[in-house]
Each structure stands twice: as structure tokens, then as C-alpha cells.
Image 1 (cartoon, rainbow, N blue to C red):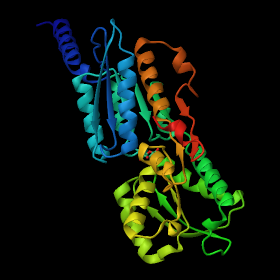
Image 2: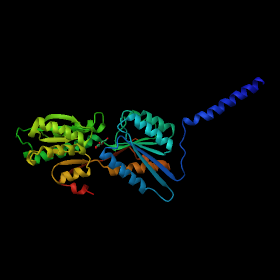
Image 3: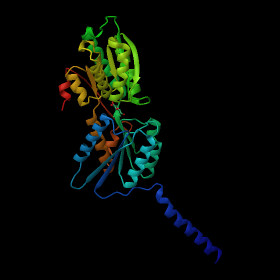
Image 4: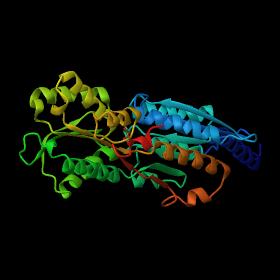
Length: 345
Ligand code: BGC
């Protein structure tokens, strides 16, 4: 065989190998005609706020189906394990998907998911657990839908301050200070850090003297909050005058603990949450909770659905209206006994 022939064969073999190997990288997933496949993955199956948001998202996507376009939504949860979530995303991509909606387990660790999505050219809408800006700027097909946590903390602080000013009996021991407990969501979650900080700051700015009895982490969870509050009740008895909670589920856990403790209602603290979940709205109506801040899941779900469809259709206006062409920030609203009716469906 001549040298030129050998060289040509070598080049051909290399090309064949490249053609066989390359589809693994930078492979654009094949679209199925007239079908938008949205794959949603949450950090756990066990979070009522997230589950309610995903239910809304499914409905919003369904509404956007037309004769010409079917929308298939699949939902999975990672058991609070980032590695497991990465694997689920890989499986969802293998099964075929056009848009990913990701509620990260660890908001500081989206690298694998971003790499996988980018390799297959699948846009990602992160929601509720916000990646840091450095991660979100890795690719122009990464979006975030959520809220500004500081706003919810400020609103919670304002509702609590108003309540205390209008109800001097909250300061049961009349020492001029409100003894309080803070129930915190989850170390490292943007909402927990910022809500705690801005809620307490706002109360102080509004002239309320506070005395912190304890800060407790209860992972956003009703059962955990109930356990922690049982311990607090056995330690402090009726000394607790206020419970500030990073979300409603934990506030509801505190209510359970007070119900079990068997105190009469004048001995209960005032209790504030965030989210506006159905059970919390009911608790405000019946007076076991004094306020919450509405975390607008309907608005967030609507925006995610709209974005998913517009990105898929290649419409740019929606994306351009986002902050920095990446962020959609939903607005919180204050809820107390004066307007709770407006939030009940
Ligand atoms: C909600 C919590 C929820 C958490 C999950 C927060 O924004 O207020 O109820 O558990 O997100 O990431």
C-alpha cells in the first residue's frame, strides 16, 4: 500500500471513530415534533410548599397545550441528596426532555447539572433554591424563578411589629421586651439566612425591644419544629412571647407543640410564618397564628410555564423581560387577620 493510501486510510478511520464517539458530547437532544417535554426535579418529595408549587406548574403547563402542541410534564424528587439529583437529571435527559426545571438540593452545587444540560443543549429553569450568580452566568440558557428573601423577612417583621404595638398584652411579663424564639429553615438556604436577618432587624427598627431565647434549625419541617418547640417549652415554660418562623410549616409545628403542652390560649406566644399555605391561612383565621407572608407559588409557577413554552418556541420577548435576562422575581404579600380572606381559595 502506498504511503498516501495509508495516510488516507488513517484519516478515514480517525473520522469514523470521531463520528461514533462525538455524539456523547454536545449532543442536541432530538425534539419530538409538536411535543414539549418538561422535566421537573425537586429537592425532596416531602415539602408542602414545593409540592404545591409543582402542582401549580403542572396545571399551568397543561393550560398551554394546544391542538398543535402537546406538553408532557414529568416530575421526580431527590431524597435531599445532590448526587442522586444529578443522576435523576441524567436519566431525564436520556429519556428525552426539552426543558429542565430544577429545585436544587444544594444551591451551591449545580455544576454537574449545568454541565449535563449544556452538553445536550437543554435550557434549565432553576426555582426556589437560587444558584449563586457565578454559576448562573456559566451559560445563557440558565434561568431562575423565585423571590427576594429579604422582602419576606421585612414584611414578617412589619406584621409582627404592628401586632405587638396594637396588643400590649403580648408582653406577658411586662418587662418591656419580647422574649422570642426563631425557627430557622436550613443552614445555607438563601431564604433562611436572609429572612432571619431582615425580620429581626425590622422589628428592632420599628422600636420593638427583643430578647432572643433561642434560634433553632428545623429544616423547613413541621415535625422537626414541633420536636424542637417541645424542648423549648419544657425549658422555658410560658416565658416565650413570640415565635418567628422562616416558613409556615415550622410555625404550624410550633402550634402543634403548644396544643400538646395544654396551656390555655393566653399563655401561648404570638406566631408568625411565611408562605401562606392553606393550613397557615386557617390558623390565622382561627387565631392560633397572627400572620404570614404570601410566597406567590401561583405567580412563580405561571412564570415558569410561560418561560418554558417561550424558550421552546424560540420567542425572545419573555426572556428579554427578565432581570439580566435570567431572573424572575415574584413579589411577596403580607397576610394577617385583616386580609386573610383574600388569600383563601
Ligand atoms: C419556602 C419553604 C420551603 C423552602 C424549600 C422556601 O422558600 O418558604 O417553605 O421549605 O423554600 O426550599
